[in-house]
Length: 82
Image 1: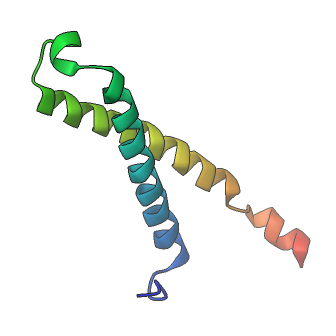
Image 2: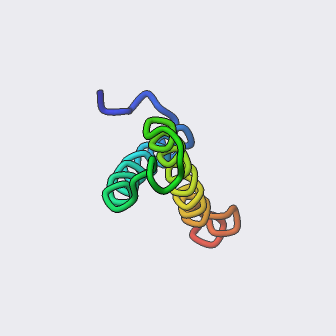
């Protein structure tokens, strides 16, 4: 599948979600390599890993979405190039 059946807006947001997912995965692995959730937070490891991953994914998705939004040309940019 080459993604040709997706409109550009949907492709952009799927790219944001996928890139933020991958980045959050790495951030979660790095963070929990040094932090033991059972010892440091007093909860279950599975719950802490899940909450940590969702937190990192949210932060990465916001950063990626802001980048995608800033990279989107405005209507005035379209008129200047023509």
